[in-house]
Each structure stands twice: as structure tokens, then as C-alpha cells.
Length: 342
Image 1: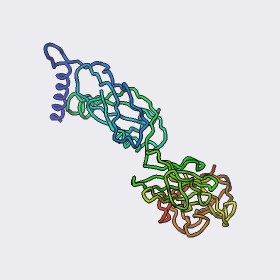
Image 2: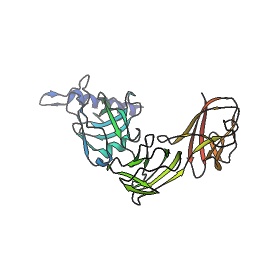
Image 3: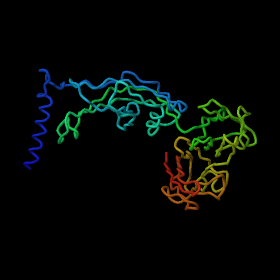
Image 4: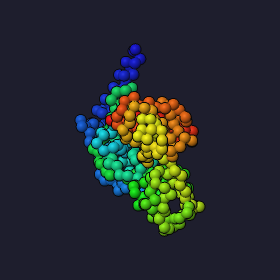
């Protein structure tokens, strides 16, 4: 106990000495009662483009002013606009806040963890300054309880880029296929209609592709889908090929309008979340999920554990429902779902 009191006393003496006892040429160092927080003076254009990933952009700020020359560590932080930094995205850390230089790829890599790709997000940015005036035992201003100061937030519209992609133009809705390895091989689940032939556009290079009979070509004719509905669409730019595979997930069962007969009640796919959903009137009865109106691939069981050939799911109250299916392993036929009565 005596030793702890001694350490605390020494820490207090050290802080007092720093703030009031350090003099040079008769000038005493005194900390302002309200130190001036850092600020963001200017922001770069936050439309981030993959082809410019190695380019450097610059944030300009002003340092914290505690009333004396002090060393501080700074970080550039972001959050969804208006959320008061409840969930902080860390972008940069350093000691010179007057010129924060960072590559577009580094900024994008930090932001894409928390913000959707290939669309505009409204994001708040701030500078955080941490000032440690003495190492010590937990007293204010020591390494375990440092002084922290924050700039006022600056809001910007930011476009974060995701994986390399090809956009489907004139396909009837905004959709894309992506290259997970960045090797020119793209895939995705897309909704198609033979009445809406489409071309492909590479937003990075500006190259457009078309094709016929599975053969891709630069500036080629619009691709005519083989059938209406959702398909897995595979494209290989190196091989100049493309292919379709029907991927239509539907509800079947005595609770549905067609009962156990096809066509099933088709679900819609959300590319951003990777889930399937449907809003539908159901009667008391049973349901299952299946692929392309057939039984080779089907899911049942419980909402938190759907498996191949699992038990029918029970609908005990008639009404309007929103059902969402999250396929966690397509090949292994495993998924979860939610069934919510509206």
C-alpha cells in the first residue's frame, strides 16, 4: 500500500513538474484550459477508382494546440454519416497531420470493410489527436489515460470500389458479375430475360463485350439470355467465353398457391446480401425450398438448419409472409432462413 501511494505521489509530482516547473529562458510551459482541437482543412475527391489504386491523395489538417509545443499521435477515422462514430473505421495513423498522404488503394481497403462497394455512401471523417505528456500510473495525461481531442467531422460522398466487375447493360436491372481473384474470370447470379439482350461493360477499362453462342467478343452483339429467370452467369475474358446455368430458387408445398406442383413460387436474389427472399400469401400447411422446380436439390429441416431432403417446414397460421433464405453452402445444400408474418 505504501509503495502504491509512493508511485502515485511521484506521478503527480512529475505532472506538476511538467506543466508548471519546466522553464526555458524564463518561459513557463502551461497547458491551455481548453486546448485547440485538430481540424480537417481540406479533403480529396472521394470517388475512388480501382485503376488509380496506386495514386496518392492528400488530406490536410491542423494539429492539436495544447498551449505549448507537444508531440501527438494522430489518426484519420470514418463512420457512416450521422452516427457519431459509434462504429469507427480506422484509415490512417501518424504524427504529421498537416499533410496526410495515402494511396487510393489503402483508403479503399479500409473503407470497404464497413461500406458497400460500387455505390455512393455518405461518410463522416475526423482527425483524432492523442496527447501523452508523461508515462505513468493512470493519472490524466499519462499513457494509460491520455488526452484525446477530435476535429469536427467533415462529411463527404464516397464511392468505394469492390472486386473487379463487369456490368450488365440493358439487362432490365442494375447487376454485375465479379472476379474474386482479379484474373479476368467473372461470375454472379443475375436475373435475365430473352426479351432484354445485354452487353457487358468493364468500368475500369471502358471495354464493352457482347457475344453469341457462348463466344465473347469486344464490341460484339448483345447477348441473348437462354430463358427468363435467375442464372449463374460465368464469363472468361482471357478465353473469350461465357455460359449460363439456371439458378431459380422457389417455394413449394401445401401452404403455397400451387401446393406441391410446379411452377414453384420463385424467390428474388439480392446481390448485395447474397440472400433470396419472397413476400407471399400462405395458407396453413407445409413448405420447402427447391431448385429449378425439381427435387434433386431441395432444403428442409429447421429455420436455423436447412439441409438436403430435410423435414417440411410448418406454416401454422395463414397470412402474408416474408421469407428470406441464406444459402451458406450451395453444393453441400445447407442454409438458414427466416419466416416472418407481416
